[in-house]
Length: 125
Image 1 (cartoon, rainbow, N blue to C red):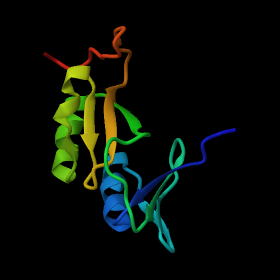
Image 2 (image 1 turned 90 degrees about the vertical axis):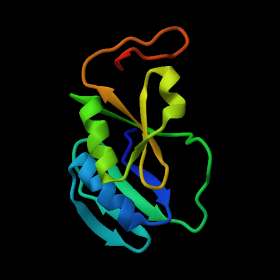
Image 3 (image 1 turned 60 degrees about the horizontal axis):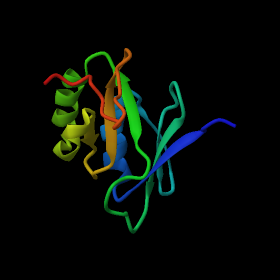
Image 4 (image 1 turned 45 degrees about the vertical axis):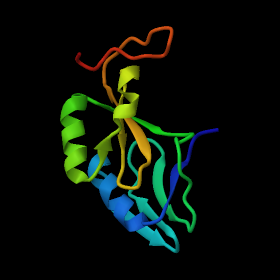
């Protein structure tokens, strides 16, 4: 089996599709009923589904995005309306949230270490 799509439940699929379109450099593609899809690129399809009730609390599933410079991507994503989640700083991961609070991590492209407690070492300081 392969993962065909990642579907994000949200209140405003147009808004989130536009945000993620810019983050992932994938144009917004089809709009079908409650769904807004990004054009297919490498990896699974990314889909935003309008739902009436969106859960709150920690995400049980999140995206890990690799990039050459996580700090530069953090600044770019914040300019697009995302935000860093400082409550995860002790774990050493750069955890961000999109405009509706969906969590995702920015990781360096190269290898990095994780200790026995699950903390990463790629952030300065």
